[in-house]
Image (cartoon, rainbow, N blue to C red; front, top):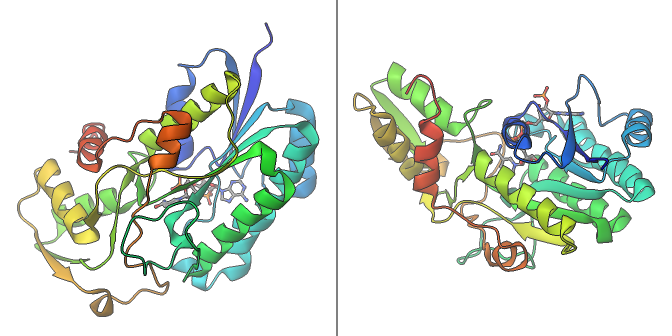
Length: 293
Ligand SMILES: NC(=O)c1ccc[n+]([C@@H]2O[C@H](COP(=O)([O-])OP(=O)(O)OC[C@H]3O[C@@H](n4cnc5c(N)ncnc54)[C@H](OP(=O)(O)O)[C@@H]3O)[C@@H](O)[C@H]2O)c1
């Protein structure tokens, strides 16, 4: 039996690497992993050629411009990767009937809501990154709505790449004191859990149950960045660094961030039977994979 092709783009990032780790559990698929060196998604001809040659049954788009603060000064590049490149993928997917699993962000919301965000809640991004990711979502819903699932996630971390968890561990070992924002609330997401959720969607599609549209996925529970940092230090056994809570006003950044971006996960649970581990359990699981912890 010929294996169906799963094309993974942005495969060298946090999420892409977690998909790589899962791939050997799915021998029914032939995975092709690409990042910008092999396939620059901003190049429409390259994307067309890749799809014509691979004819993927599934696209897992893990590629993105993710430097939230830098994006305020690199507006064109941010939109090019998060929107124009998604258009290239959507057009190719439509032509080849490829199911697209695309990842978006809680930063499409402004954070003014007081209850967890559902997929239908009004979007209102407050940063260039958030606006560019929203445009990427819209491109998919315009070009290939019946073929695409968009999974919005939040506060992603992994043993791969650079992220808040690694930064807190490094700074915690270097410094005696650290200031962390305590008035932005959300839910961390272990990229390995998100990778499992995406593969669960593919398995469901294989079984004939594919429900296109927008979904929310993060880990369960909520915390502030300050509480997240405290838990990281506790689990990593860092006791020599005092973490001080500060307000967003005291810690200005180039990009504005939503003060509250908890995601309601009931739809992905219901439609795809995806499990949602507690953020503290997943953080522990991730830290156990760090060599230096
Ligand atoms: N990180 C978070 O906290 C967070 C939160 C919410 C949602 N998300 C979303 O979750 C998804 C995965 O995020 P992540 O943290 O795994 O991202 P990541 O670690 O930054 O990985 C993204 C990958 O995409 C690659 N890439 C950039 N431009 C490309 C292009 N033109 N063509 C092909 N590949 C390109 C990057 O290469 P370079 O490194 O060389 O640029 C990188 O390897 C993204 O859609 C992101 O927007 C992330």
